[in-house]
Amino acid sequence: MQKLKSGSRYALMIAITGLLLWLSLRGLHVEGENKFDYLWQAWLKSDKMYLWLMALAGIASHILRAMRWKMLLKPTGHDIKTSNSFWALMTGYLVNLAVPRGGEISRCYTLYQLEKTPVETSFGTVVTERIADVLCLLILIAFSFYLEWEKLKKFLDALPFSSGSVSVPWWVWAAALAGIVFLIGIYLLRKNEKFVKIIRGFKGGLLSVFHLEHKWLFIFYSFGIWALYFLMSYLVLMAFPETNLLGFRAVVTLFAVGSIAMATPLPGGAGSYHVLVPLALTSLYQVAKPDAVAFVFVFHAWQTLLMIVLGVISFVVSNAIVSKRVSLIE
Image (cartoon, rainbow, N blue to C red):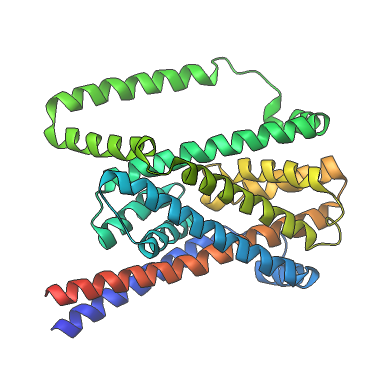
């Protein structure tokens, strides 16, 4: 009976892994050509040394992010293992490729399974992480506009959504939505003690950054993560003869454009990334469109493949840990 239960858990785990893989790979579209043939041809054109170095930089950034998450959780009374933080983080990335923003909740739930950390508390730290990341991204975007103002202004003016009028400014809708959420939150706080507990846990995670023992280390991790992201962009530019002479300014600009594209609510930025970055390459740096598409496809596909491999490994390992723990209890 025990073996049957364990076998069922692993069968379910494999089925979920297969579904996530299928959903992730489904987002890689290439018009007029088989996606795998296209990927293979683009791969053959690239300098593999730079792509492998990019993968190492990506892994290093994920390790730093796992370490940063661990230190954010410590002030809340949850001293987790770095390995479990990494497994939960990469499992979340895998889910995020299939379900936009679904990985944020998934990583918190995975961490709960591994460390019994309340989801509301860990989610509060995730929000804090996102705030820090947005600040880093805004600094980078401001720097890129400082370096390439004329080119970026021309690029933004050429975008489809840059023209036309909107009857109601976006910030009006945002303010109205925030007001409604606030009022609903106040009502629930007064009516539901369990909700109060959840809010307190979330608040504890959100404000954990103010109770860090070494705040400078949090800043170091944050800038280190984004420095590695930048290094990844530089390395992939060096991997193609059509882009390896563009220079530092181009790396900064394309990194900013790519980061904005990846932040859109699409699986792994699929679609938005494949539109904005080639457009920036062709309009700002006169790279031929076929070469720009090949560059973008390899970069994004290579990043996605890295996340899938690490995500699947993390998903399997975390489920194996949980299954083993359950088996010992039973």
